[in-house]
Length: 388
Image 1 (spheres, rainbow, N blue to C red):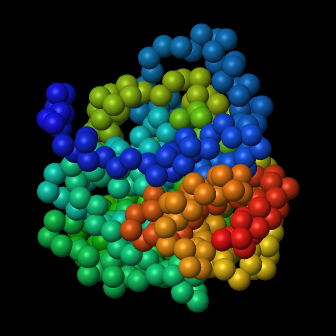
Image 2 (cartoon, rainbow, N blue to C red):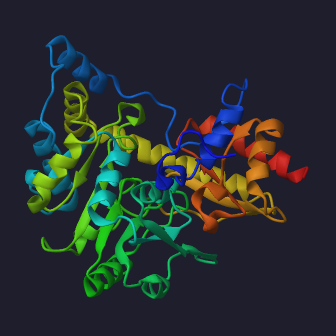
């Protein structure tokens, strides 16, 4: 039967979220441990929320700068300059309505109908979704799972480049695998992009959630100001602000007029009170980040120790992010298994199929929660898998 409400094909082709599908199935189940989405269980720290309240009380409820209020752009630049020990200009920073908005802006500027963007897979599904909505084609490059955990073969990336390729979308530390590019791999990917004249869309959102150092290796460590690199970022993870929908895009300052124009035609700017909260997070949230990273490290180690006792679990210790991406020996249909575990273990996990073809046969577990929840989830899952 023909659709009585015809719309553009790229809107119809936007993939449905396999995470939301399971989330909706078990959302209100009593006693369920919800480990399916990418957030912790802590609310935003009070000092951040109080900054937003003060802003509202002072009447900051009007239209504002499309690129972000100058104090926030300056605070982000200062934070990045300190973290990476390299000066970052505030003119490179553009405040967005969440990390997803930053990604959409980056995709809009780099790829459209007829273009391709290389995405290592398994990958955060919003990469593929953003490309599909723009009319571009995601070209997935399968990562490999072996004795060294998840790895990305740079030669596989090179072979995937065609005359239609416009960008590499690189997420490190990665959601869902925890794969983290070494400095040599970052340099090799940048060199590859330079040779082919490609953009790099760098998602380094989990850069502070890195367990072999203070932060993960970054394109910022090897790039020059002339390199075609855009960074998408968010306040969601480091400062427990997923519901605030505020992030930023870092791009060459010369693109400023274009970015600001695109913001005008997408969100018309980010609410000032959320920007005041973001400034408070940057200026006073260092200890909170440190605490969260240590909590994630403890939970990761607890989970790995527990899963090691069940021989059917297949996994590698993730060096970054806060997810365990694991398989169950003998089980290929992990979408079906995710629904089954909601019913039988009362644990909510994301099916690996939500993360592209490379995720088939795996499940994602977010371990940024109270340690007792992770211990209990591991117990329930071990019992359920042992009974399969």
